[in-house]
Length: 530
Image 1 (cartoon, one colour):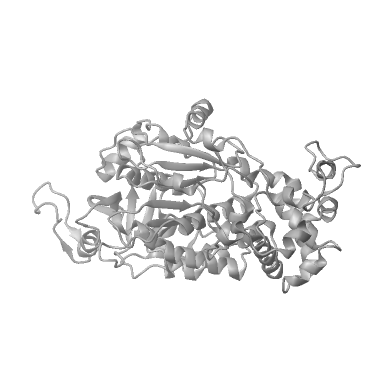
Image 2 (cartoon, rainbow, N blue to C red):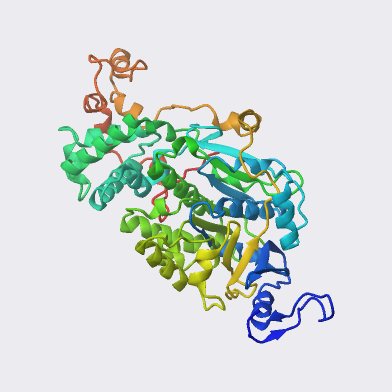
């Protein structure tokens, strides 16, 4: 024990056989987490090498829509922290969204397995551990992997997010936005990639150049770059992520029959090698929620808590427009009852304008093996409020399942920084068997709604249709072929250029479809689904 001022424990008078007196600083930290209302229990306070089990570290439930950050080096326990928080949110009736990058979060649906390590951890932090599974739905991007397929139409995905996926530069992103605007106003629904390629193909043709000139600022060279990027993207097998039926993000707001919040797990192991795609799709899900949900202000508990894993991938090489849209979405979605937790290795992975909005912080251990590591460590320490700890020393010495915590109190003020030994999740800490996962997916009522892809008439088909007055023979001749393309079959460019339909559309005013499309700060759009 140091020679700091000490006082008796707050939980018992000092007497023979009782716990040693606690330093004043430790009691002040513990008092900062003594919330009166509903809260999530994270664990117990660590002070000078001791776990003070009676000093519980918690997050007030109403503050979960004030966003947060879970950070730490690989292997320090971030995934188990997500699982712990998700379980308690579900138990309190709050739906949760989790992105499962490594495929080890499906266990949240099954009771955990007791063991010596769990028993010891529960005793350390005064946790009444009970093996419990939680209601879960499993999803997969485009049906690639184990889960109900999640698809987006090109129209609703929008130009800003699609530009990130296609790795377009700022000029090309702005030009793609003009193409979307043109399609919106002409009533051309962009359901999948071939729809967008058809529109761009026409605009880059000799016949379409007058229309191209009518879209201010879009050059034929830039349109050609966009067309080539779309063709290459589809050639990589990415087409299945776009189409119909489009996923309704309101599915994430479900509770089960006993009032527990459903944990929506997006299984991503099958697309681990496509980080630009899955990270941007996560942002589309969040932007779509923002677009659809009404304003509710501050409530007793969030409508949804959204965990954004591998967050550094979202910000990597992002355009200014993309970063600005993220910042505004995160700032404004709080008033719609949605809390967002970014999950990454260090706070420096998150831009300052976004980091400043993350009031709840759980920082696992950091490593300082290189000069860059040391720089990241110092930068991380500067992002915390004043601390009674030596944070540089503490953050490099934390064990697995331990973290430095600061959250927003019930009054919205930051709590004292608290080193914390975290509780153990009560669900299975690992994946469930593949057979059980498949059964959970196929037995879901959502499977029948989203499993089968639908390719209805949209922009591509409309651009093949001849103008009014043409006969059925010519209509059949211009119809898109179902068989794979051979050398004799015309390309999309040739089919679109050979069509007179686009000229007719180009001369017309926007249709009702076009007028119904409205776009959010992210350029995403949603028409009435049902």
